[in-house]
Length: 496
Ligand SMILES: *Cc1c(COP(=O)(O)O)cnc(C)c1O
Image (cartoon, rainbow, N blue to C red):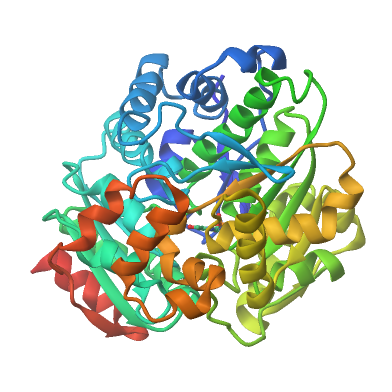
């Protein structure tokens, strides 16, 4: 029996996993969720002996039940190969009194690679299984890291095209350079004069536009998504939490069944939702600590039960978390409502109409595993400095938000339960912020690549290939548009 998926806004209509991946977003604007969260079907103790790829298989086969064993193993093998600069794929690194789960060893040095290196394989396999003959057009909104990871995954993949929208003034210089130098005739990168929420809402509108859908379908195209609204992003992200538990067992930090806590620097709520799914599969996770930067809409939500996006959007040094509408929260809301699609749809309508909604006390009780915290810009820089001075380990700005939140607000109460902090980007990707956090006077005057060379001296780890690649790469994408011009930009790329 296949595990089926339905929209968070309509539980009546079910699709298989491969259909959900192919569609990306449900037609009613909802997100696909599995009808139940499946349990891990192996003894926890066996995780200690498993490689990343083996762990990926035991987790993903529970969710993607209409993929054959051969198909799934083939996707995993092709995704988690020497595109990653370490065989461990996601090493767990102890520094200070926490464990940093390094999710940045892939092609674009941010955690998006963990899922986006496998999504193109899952997607093209899904197209084959469902006899989809149209060309798949991946529409992506990015706060900086998804864009490059998706471009790198889908570039020159036959049968696909990819269009990425990023906030022109809302990403780091390295992030922008990585995207606008992307090669591949099927790629298109567009800056919009707006923020990430504008890009994401615009993409969702394009998905919902039936007239556009039909027009492009006649021309042989169908849309899908590489954002974490696609369940094909979420499932591969569950894997590394399960893997990290195996590492803690192997190193004798935990014995089988003892809990770990998880701390996640959060934006669109995809990464931490994957940890929630891992917990519901039976992985012993205690707290799910959701760390925000100054855009602390999620912190306020967990404190009060009120989600309110009506506030100033702050550009911070952790741009991949500069988000006021966290899409994946919808999946948690649906779950916490007891899978009440009508209730969820009504809350989401309130969000789009008034920018806010309030959940019931019963729903809050269902979310009690989550705890929120946030760090200001100054606290984030302090944390980078503190960890570097105390252990020589260099955090990127996003990881530093999580690290600060954990150490300041939670470590005391967590006793001996180990904390796994999701380390979501390489410090090289945010070299300017990281280096000026360490020493403003010395590094504040240097240019971006000068800073990267200095970072290399301090960190003592080689400069990632992803950085060397862009040092002298020519800019290939220069289009910048108003935020209401997204539809015409899509048509121009596909139809001309
Ligand atoms: C995307 C991203 C995040 C936020 O992850 P979500 O799944 O959107 O919550 C945090 N840090 C970095 C470096 C990212 O790229």
